[in-house]
Image 1 (cartoon, one colour):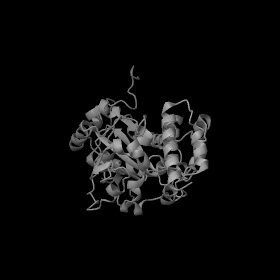
Image 2 (cartoon, helix red, strand yellow):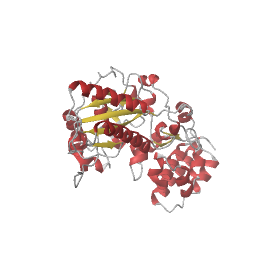
Image 3 (cartoon, helix red, strand yellow):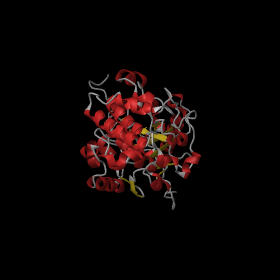
Image 4 (tube, helix red, strand yellow):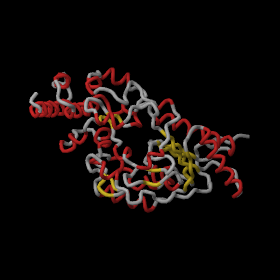
Length: 376
């Protein structure tokens, strides 16, 4: 006879099958095989203890290096305590999915051409969140079919999770001096996702750090955001400023922004380990609407309706048209001086948004200065 309130599949109090150590080892191997069969590039398993990472996180927050990422403060130490985020969690299954598109224009060539816009390589195609969530849910359902109901929860940038430390502890790589996760056989061009589970699976081991004496990422950072090895001040980071930051881009960083209109890959582009990076196998991550090497002027002309339509299903869409124009205005100010650029900027000089108007005014002044310097 069924119970009045049967346990939900994600209920950590739901009964799980008692498994021997040998059975748990076999189950871990099956988890990894299923995950790879679902298209994930790598998978590992770790426990939930992150005491050293919690200490570093709290010090980072106390120093104000998170900028306006106030949600980091709200959840605080909970980010380092998976069992508090999802009660009953015993292990975290961490997965990697390579995203570098094989058909994208050469990043160096795009960055070197001031008339073009540079978009971080992870955002050229469709948004990864839903794709990874669905596959992690498929993994959870495969385990449920085998074991019966058990506590679990999927995360893909969807909660206060320290994904890089968890991935490191799960054996997927080490955290490099630029604070990105690095894998010896795959570099850093990949996404991470997690499946929290109430299963006592055997855990993997964290790899050694292989950055050695290399400081290429620190030298390459356009704004000096990597203030020391393994330390990032988000307030100086162009990815933060062009994506997460809602207000004006500080003037001290506008020239350094160059033509980067969404994110910044410089620290990854110079990393020696990325010579081992793999192209994605996901067609969804290949460039859409020519975003791998678009003209700044063309993107700046997009109306809000065009922005929303053309970037449907893209991670870029979440910054909104106002910030899109803000970023583009700065990049146009840095572009080679020309009448076409000035005309484009003037078309937005009376924009309804004060944020856009302020950045357009800066860009126009910079264009005039550049033109005068060139005798144009």
